[in-house]
Length: 212
Ligand SMILES: C[S@@+](CC[C@H](N)C(=O)[O-])C[C@H]1O[C@@H](n2cnc3c(N)ncnc32)[C@H](O)[C@@H]1O
Image (cartoon, rainbow, N blue to C red; front, side, top):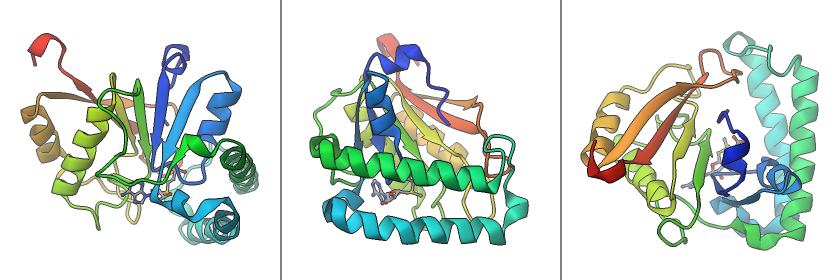
């Protein structure tokens, strides 16, 4: 989703809106330093274990009911995707029990982290995905906050809404808002597509040397 390379894994990575993904656990196993932030983590591992099973079932049901909106080249098959999601959930639950300090119970647009305290911020399936509920101003403040804590880039995936896979009507205006704050935005293709047409991420960084 984020075209991560070895250089990215050298720095500290924040997975914002990390949910029950196995990213922090997997990054840790690769020797990287990663942490995640999500309001969900306030519930603690035991409650999460119960809730996540129901969440996976709901997600699978939604995908089955809207099969034409998804492509299977990356996962291979619905069964393989379900296994990967179950494995990710298990890795997540084991990791949050072992390393609770890596999981911050916090939500955008406020992160309890110092300015430029991480090297890279990743955010998947929150911004743009929920653009029906979260407006342009919320997106602007959320991205500004993620940029504040990052020494490097913020990467956001995907760039389309969940329900209909359509692009977000305020996308260009939002980029103009961010540029006006001195941030540099770019849209990059990534080697992952599941929701049909959702194969680009937005990168947001700080302008170097004050030149835009
Ligand atoms: C659809 S899930 C995506 C989880 C994960 N990023 C992934 O792609 O598998 C959206 C996540 O965003 C979290 N979330 C909701 N509001 C948030 C906020 N204000 N700040 C950070 N995360 C939030 C939810 O708790 C949920 O875990």
